[in-house]
Image (cartoon, rainbow, N blue to C red; front, side, top):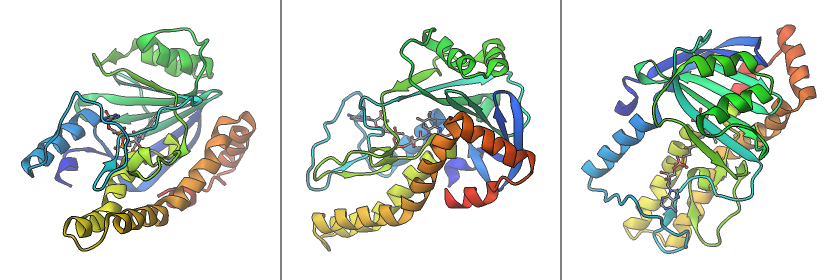
Length: 279
Ligand SMILES: Cc1cc2nc3c(=O)[nH]c(=O)nc-3n(C[C@H](O)[C@H](O)[C@H](O)COP(=O)(O)OP(=O)(O)OC[C@H]3O[C@@H](n4cnc5c(N)ncnc54)[C@H](O)[C@@H]3O)c2cc1C
């Protein structure tokens, strides 16, 4: 937990649809705001301090084997999505965490260290979309009707090297690799509007800890340890994955967003209840 001691604490949430504020709320438990750069560097340092050997600059192959755990993130496929991310400063924000829905996807805004805002969006992949590199993010936003946010992004200060794009992946349970024990996104990818994938990666590691420790001490076979990990993952995540996957298409469909907008206007949006179901 010391890795998060200086992380920002996000409490307020603003949900927008194409620039229009639909709903404001508060998290009962604050969300941490920290960049992957900083968090990964801290995890690497701790892993090495504990005697772990980290090899970088090499790509492993997803082959099953005794004692092998595959936690290499989303599984490339001919998926329908593109994820675009950058760190930008000088963005006007009304809430600690903002979710901006549009006709082609959604983007989340969350502060991280040094005044930067992590801008991370998921969009339906459109190979005809104009724009290359950094320009893709405002271009996708504009195409989805988030014109003001696109303009604010273009006017902001972009952290050099922070832009990244990932395309070609599917959300939900990933196709199992025969005999290989997988964790994190490699096992299942929650739709990112939940802002929960990182927590799930840590929780998945937690689920695996006891069975893998028992195996490393020779107390159980590898097959049994792997089976127990899979059961623990299922118990912990199946409900939130089901709920998130049911909500995700509603957020993307114009009719679904209109319905949510009407509920929000009447203060009938069950935000806290839904939050409990995806946590
Ligand atoms: C658009 C979008 C927005 C998101 N927003 C949020 C958010 O706001 N909050 C949140 O909590 N989560 C968010 N997520 C989800 C979150 O990023 C993931 O759930 C989380 O990173 C999964 O962690 P992981 O360790 O399983 O995989 P990763 O973080 O992807 O780590 C996998 C690692 O394995 C390495 N690797 C890959 N292939 C190989 C190979 N062949 N050999 C060796 N190494 C390999 C990669 O380089 C990487 O270092 C978002 C995801 C998307 C797509």
